[in-house]
Length: 170
Ligand SMILES: [Zn+2]
Image 1 (cartoon, helix red, strand yellow):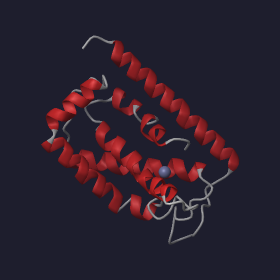
Image 2 (image 1 turned 30 degrees about the vertical axis):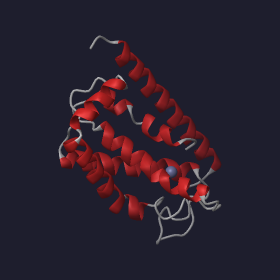
Image 3 (image 1 turned 90 degrees about the vertical axis):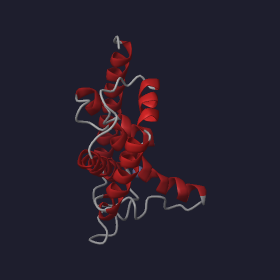
């Protein structure tokens, strides 16, 4: 995956296709915040930047729970601020507050999709199925090119839907 925002953008079309069932905040937070890990290692100058948080062991267990709790708090205590933010970005929401189960399921999906995209596009991601295997058995250069192209096309598709929503009357 070339850039962290592409993780969220490539899935954003799901929101425009079903606003009532898609918690965009949960999807965005869960599919992007995990890249705080490589950011941290880049900032401290460590060459191996995708570590234990870039593996299914944590991203299918602890990480979606943390993400869901953060999103739940944001949606329940800062609802008005979220309405303003959604409006500012011309996202035309029907609602900004979802049930805890919906938040959790979108967090789980966002986390899973992040690791799925990353494992196909990052050669050096040794914890992907750790402790079963140390190393990334899913990386192949051809698959990486296809996965990168697919995510960029999905991101463009999402942006087109966003633009369409933007141009529609409220
Ligand atoms: Zn990542």
